[in-house]
Image (tube, rainbow, N blue to C red; front, side, top):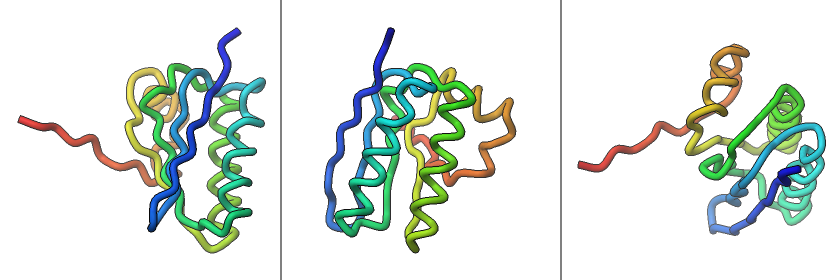
Length: 109
């Protein structure tokens, strides 16, 4: 069973929560704990970095939606970054890409 690792980095203007692994029914509490910790520390602007996220099911989507609701309910904002592959596909087929602010991928030439 793959687990979800969260790496929290504090920046002056936001907190970055980097996800690595699978976001599903078993690992969703790990995401919720990271978001709750950020809010408890007074940070209201969060960036969820999905670069290392390899899987996300409906429970994972629900966890992201709940996290966003918690953040916005506290007067903050939450963005997703590096949403790609299977995770982007799940967001697209579920119709939830418009439910989140997703930072566009930058291409360097």
